[in-house]
Image (cartoon, rainbow, N blue to C red):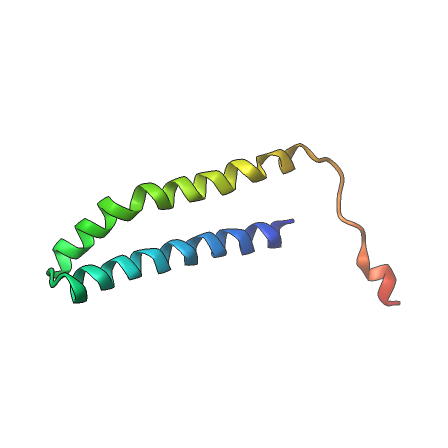
Length: 79
């Protein structure tokens, strides 16, 4: 269960990183802004949707906390 959580967290982190880098690229190379202006514009433009996406994923997975029990011991299958 911990591994699945780590994979989901890494996926969310990479997704937000890609979104921010695309915003920075657009602001610097297409609109000709400085790095500081591009960073500020990217954060004000893309931070709320990125936060909403993360919050949606987290809230969708909260019901999994109510499931009790453990994982099946798979080492038995390999003997």
